[in-house]
Amino acid sequence: MQDFIGDFRRTVEESAARLLSMTEDESREPRAEGKWSAKEILGHLIDSASNNHQRFVRAQFTDDLVFPGYEQEKWVRAQAYKEEPWPLLVALWRSFNLHLAHVMEHSPEAARLASRDRHNLDEIGWIRIGTSEPATLEYLMRDYVGHMENHLRQILGA
Image (cartoon, rainbow, N blue to C red; front, side):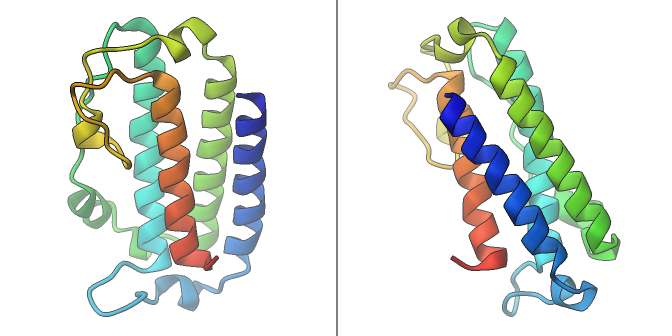
């Protein structure tokens, strides 16, 4: 897990530097007609960090991995990420994810690896697993990072 967390931190730091090299105008431009801009994608990643922060902490005290989902389009629109200054969004995203790395690093191994029969990762997961398969908090953490990396590729390219 330590290597995974170290890689996560490096990805956050390196991506933040690359994101900051984008201009305000570049960050505001939608990727294609009807698609989100870099600002909106990063806003979505901030929302994902916020939701998963709650999940990562709560899962340390529960016997299941059942969490509310969220309506990403409505969240992005309601928070008007297009109107936020790009450097502020990047700083918030960077800080939130470095904190999540800290939370992951300090989550007890027993809680992280406990097999949970009851979960809704078939609904909230990025790579969804069926309800008949057990899940772990560590799976949810790794899934979160995979989701984040996928969206960073959309913004920054390969």
